[in-house]
Length: 217
Image 1 (cartoon, rainbow, N blue to C red):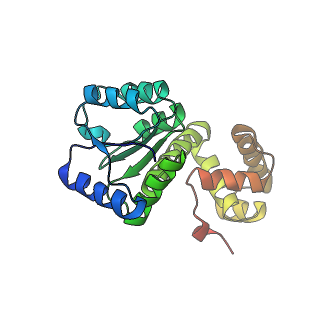
Image 2: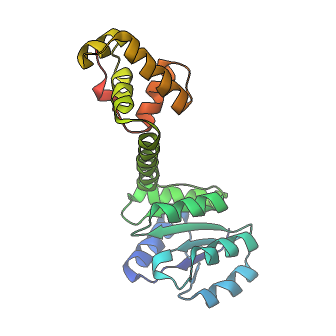
Image 3: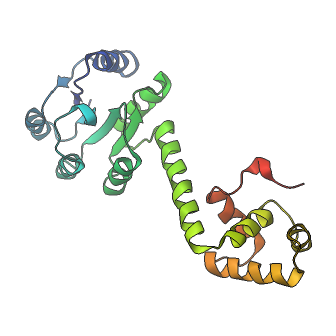
């Protein structure tokens, strides 16, 4: 059985983790640390440890401390378990290591148990709330990116195309000629690098311009 290191300075969550480890993974033997300097000797002794860490309450100076330790002890798996993590922090973790799982403390018991089990198998697991945070931020960033590229009129026409309106319908709604809409459409395709309405629609959905419930019937 792999060694477990609890690096969480919040007593109530630590008690909860101990209970879950004992009940669902039959683990009653583990190490507790409250400082970075105490963590290193344990990793040297057991380099394939599973470390459960509350990053926000630990004394790491930066995310690099965590990434460097995991890289140095490449057989270790980490579960970053916290109340509040921003999307940039999570992106950096996931980009730099495939041995670091991320989950929020308000996750369900089932999900917390899942992340612990996956870590013991050597797998990475991303909690649902963390995944949703990353998806939401990607949509916002995509939307900003598209708005920087397209004019206001092009964004509006892209939305209408994405909900299923034909070129004639768009032209009628906007009181312009079909030729004008076709010109806008060509410019949209060129700017967002797509070849047809289907691809443009997927792009608009990813960018957050439309929702599946908005589809025109």
